[in-house]
Amino acid sequence: MSHEHNAAGASHGNVKQYTIGFILSVLLTIIPFGMVMAGGIDRGVVVAAIAITAVAQVLVQLVFFLHMNSSSEQRWNVIAFVYTIMCIAVLLIGSVWIMNYLHSNMML
Image 1 (spheres, rainbow, N blue to C red):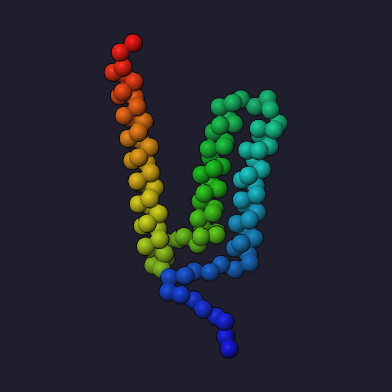
Image 2: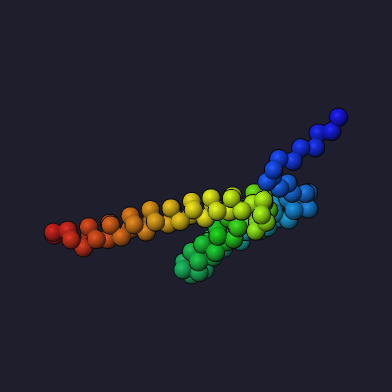
């Protein structure tokens, strides 16, 4: 009796991929943490480093743990992810735009 089951569109990683993803995730967590704990570094540099490593962390999680790639099996997952990001961006940008507009029209 075999326990091998691969649903359509399911991509499973191997130990090497999970290990690489884990090591990258740990490094991308340690870098900004170390910069903050060291102190003495310009605040703008620290904020930029946190933002860059956060984006890199999300990409590592998507590729190594969620197995999102450009293969045909993952096409719908990638489309759903891009749609979600676009909706969040419209919501955030629209909210900031509306708040800025309201702020500029407030009577003092």
